[in-house]
Image (tube, rainbow, N blue to C red; front, side):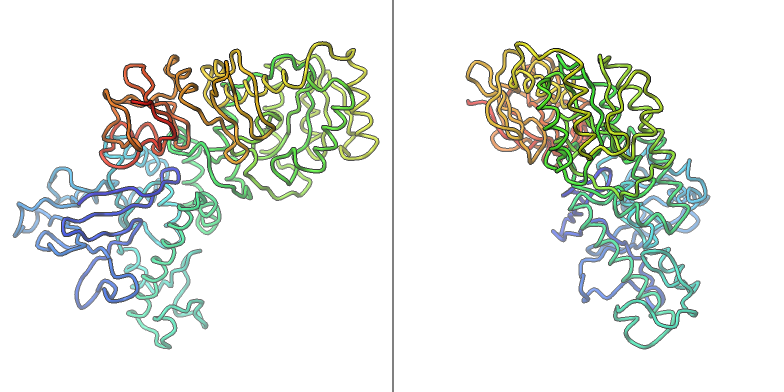
Length: 581
């Protein structure tokens, strides 16, 4: 059996199990415990015919996962390697059978009672050499938990909890369990519920259908890069899920961030858990680790966010920018947006994910966590970047931000869009310094571009703008050095896309490099051809394919660096440009 990953969304993934008889089974999927006459797996002639099932070692049909029998009994076919070692349930009668085709958490039922141990066990599996194996989940896979469990990286779920629920009279839904006998009108139109009959068989069939339907929704969310949103809505139904997600975010940020794409899908940040999304926390940490204000800026202008993204296209921000331009001091003003859940967005980074890809409910009130985040990030910005003047031109964010500022001017008085506030903003900037001398618009744009390159590639990115000029109009601008294009910022991607000349700049610094043997990729680079990968590379990053420091190609990473090191199958880098032979 081989496992091929087809799409990724953080630790979650869709994939294909490939059997020697060429049968293919999609994951995530249910593995059915098949006990003829009592707990039969769903009809194989039904809508989804390719279903996996569990048998003991005497089973060898297509779509079968073999679980070795306990040493308490004689095994008729002990020579057959099992896919699943019974030791995963800590059976006292289980002998170690060695590694099979699946990875799993040991003693899964007890882990359900201890969120800390569950998260630690998951981290151990997902950080080890078996990362690429399908991860099998026993006992825990109720429909309302499936989104979270797939988010954690599980690929296969046995039907044991669905059977147990049917035996206990539990009618399963995507938001939890109902008492089957107390529900007057069944809220489902599956064949079992629509039959008009009620019994253990119909309840089990419904539970099977509900789990299958939830996994279809989960697979769709993965394909759209929106599984985290689905998870945040599902965890509300179960305290166990809430505490596990929070512990995952608090204690396993590094694990999640390593697999989180640098360029994701637009999302809604509508819950407390949204504040700790790995891509949001990465944004905040990357600001602290990589960010430096554009050279020459002296005035910090703090402004509110807008519903429209990127902010520059909104009516309110056009007013702010017009006031800055009319002041005649535009090149020394650094606009920074204060927003939840990101905290701060420097104007020059407003295209970079997730700055233009989030949406939040607006109530006019910031809760305690949001206030603390804004206070800490503004304090960091002012103390680390050292401006000559700080202007607070804020609305709802005004109180928490102003409380941590010392020497500043408040030009909004809580109403940033009013005519009086806009005029006060313009006057404050104009009166602070004499008119600019010798600084043009293009010079400031180049410094903004340098800031973007540093944010995307770290300190090595600064060299991309050495002796460079910019061509084009925002948001689509080329970086050109001595008539050779280094890279290009595009509004759609919000990042710098490198050419081979730009790849050479990063290769000299050894940044964002994927090492290969002595060949030039013809087409995309697959994992089998990767010898090493920079640990800073994330899915969606521009990656430079090199051999002994010589750039051979550049493209977009399709795997995390951790996967590139151990994968034997799949595309590692989607090549954009390659060296001419």
